[in-house]
Image 1 (cartoon, one colour):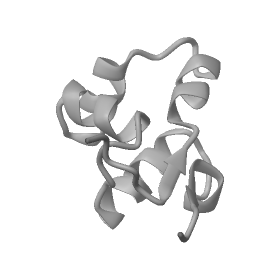
Image 2 (cartoon, helix red, strand yellow):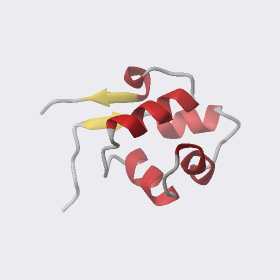
Image 3 (cartoon, one colour):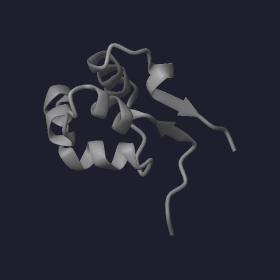
Image 4 (cartoon, helix red, strand yellow):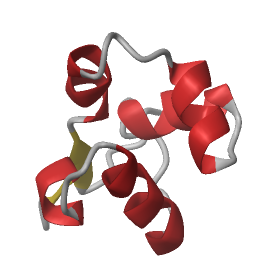
Length: 72
């Protein structure tokens, strides 16, 4: 059964516009594995608040610009 988290994001789009940054490059910048970035992008895993802030900071965005909350 697929996980249906109420949090979506635009990390993939932001990576593309950041000189086509790879998942691995982003993972190294924020201190997690590529698999973690992949799971977050696919909304299979919700990042910690600290990790969400780190990701947003890498792209010069606010958390609200990167992550969207969709209550059920």
